[in-house]
Length: 192
Image (cartoon, rainbow, N blue to C red; front, side, top):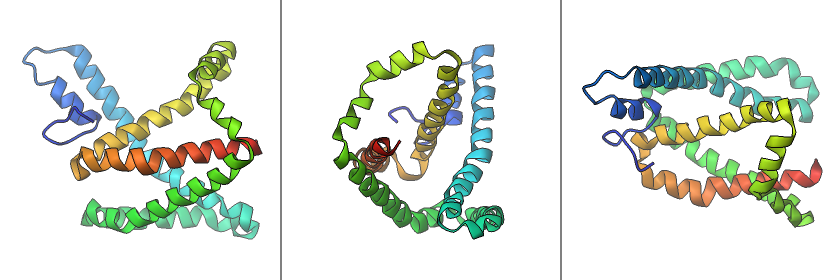
């Protein structure tokens, strides 16, 4: 977050900074292309997966709604992309309160689980992650795919720096998003 390109963030802004040298460097060009491919792939996959996974929760509550999950996801995505050219600020104002409510809900649900087994916080010890990584072969490699999703999420925060600036992102991450996610993930452990 402390590196930006005239207030803009994201892998493409970062690569533009690296490419300002007058020397032609094939490694930088390759990194730019790789970063752009990741951004386009993430931009195409993440909205669909996010909306679809949120709606698939309806299958648990009301299995009769299962045939409507995919059409509803497509409808929501089309509506969002049709409104997006009107400005991301309008979408942010509409979804900001929704996201705040969402993070409050997952934090409270996680807190409920943590109160039953507070020992789950031992899972945040990096020793266990390193031990798992080196003792499970191919499975460990596949788990790294999930870690990659974390990297793309962090890049999305970095890319939003041009919209909001670094200070609001740091504050919201530190005091809302991170604690809510920690409580949520830790709170799910007693039920696994």
